[in-house]
Length: 81
Image (cartoon, rainbow, N blue to C red; front, side, top):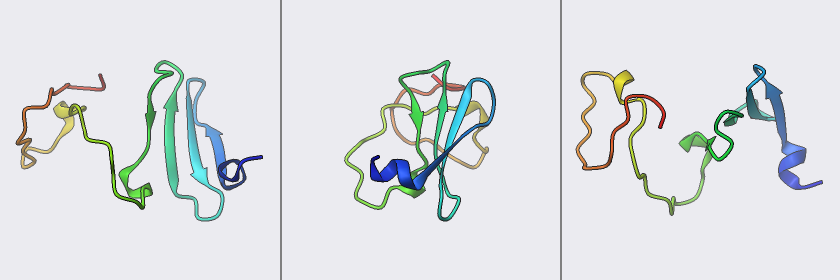
């Protein structure tokens, strides 16, 4: 068994969605939707090291607050892509 399997608790919050949590502290580690099998949402707050991945788009732009400005030329999607 891998270390992450010992530390992560999986929970099926619905028929289509699975979520991962830290067994020790309860922190949210990931969100997985079976309708998007190649997509895994991981909160940025979980990552301790320097990010070597750059964003390629903005999602849920229709839900952003009015005061939040997007100041780049990346594609914008009203909801999830």
